[in-house]
Image 1 (cartoon, rainbow, N blue to C red):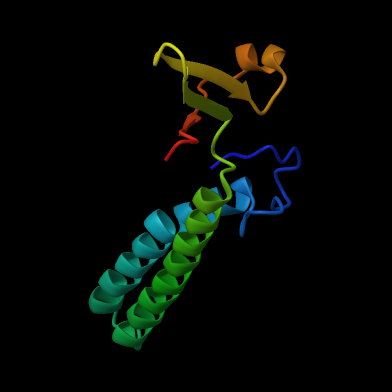
Image 2: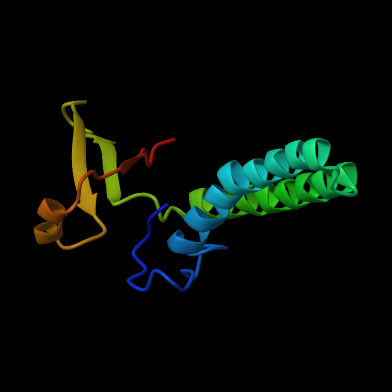
Length: 127
């Protein structure tokens, strides 16, 4: 997730988590917690470590809780419109009936060349 926030350690005004924190928690939920959980369960069976079910259960609850936080963060990000770099406004000429498309950027046009990709929202004022 990206926004216009220049400091990657602090959330934007419309984001629940900063980009850096979101990516970190996502890796934790998708990779680290399942790996640690599987490893502990396997080692508990092989080496007789205590409370394998309780440890794995607690890690599952933690992953679920953090996954819910990620879902809320993504929803607030999408709802904020921060993922868009501008809009394509669709209007219709009253006399000719021809549709007109206007590109409205939320950034300086000189910044486009530095981006890898850009996303626009289609704005249809008549709907």
